[in-house]
Length: 214
Length: 214
Image 1 (tube, rainbow over the protein chains, first blue to last red):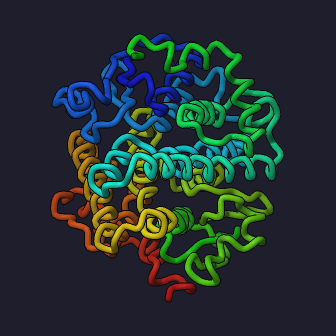
Image 2: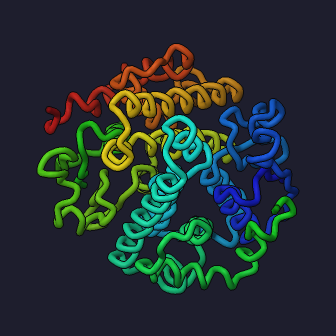
Image 3: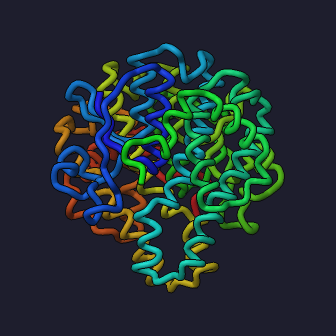
């Protein structure tokens, strides 16, 4: 398997964690989102993914996009250890946590969105950073409230086993820390983050550990 | 089952289509996103979903959020007719189309995001509409390119059977039409949309057919 990604992309980070948790070895191809005008726009990469977004997974010639679709694929083709529980209601809970991050928080703070705010709408650096923090803080607070209300969390988002929910939480918290977001109001998410960051699968997937980190 | 939704919410529209395709009867509770300062912010609704977002599905006391998590739950608990193919690579393709809409297009044009642009960043009505069209047109063009390159589409996104991909495409095209986005460059998506809109499951789920439509 070959993973096309970028060290700091949180969607790439998610897939690295999932591959590590499954114990699957993989090759990496770095796609630098800020060099050469954005290597994701190069014709060779666009031939793989016309959306010009990372990550892309090539599994023996099968080219896949979208981090959550890739992780569900890994779960189906390499079921052990599972990243989703057996029970359908619990699976819906885990996926809803994952999607709250993938749909309600992360898309608003993508590089291309921040660039549009600055270049097309002419917002200031300060306004751009306030936008970033607003969506992260509001989104994480809503997620914390949901997880507390659901009362399923233990060391991890679902009791004491790592699931897809944790795979999604950790890169989002990493981003939040990097952008100096306030995390005081999300103690449950921070507890989950800290438990995860003791595990080699998460440690080894960290952006700072990637060969393309700069 | 009881679906809390809003007639014009495309995430609610998705779940209505999935319930109809599965032939599952359901009760509806309207949550008007524009009345009473937004009924999604009312304490009773926030107790169901602290994120104050629709849709929410209550299945016999099991409360679920996030349209894609709800649809995966319906797929697992009511497998017939299937909304995902059997083959893992094809499932990844279908989910990647779904997620391209759920993550790369739809979140940028949510009501709360458009409100932030106007109220906090002070952008003009014209700039707001240009933002909306930019992300829809760019996102749909990327999706069209991906679907054409993958060469799996027939009447629908995956050959001639309706899948989760189609369930996601239709509400997004509906939104695009409502906001006068250009759809000339996405003939494959439009062909899929038109085939879907001949089916009762899609027709009956249309926003204009909902009891709360105004």
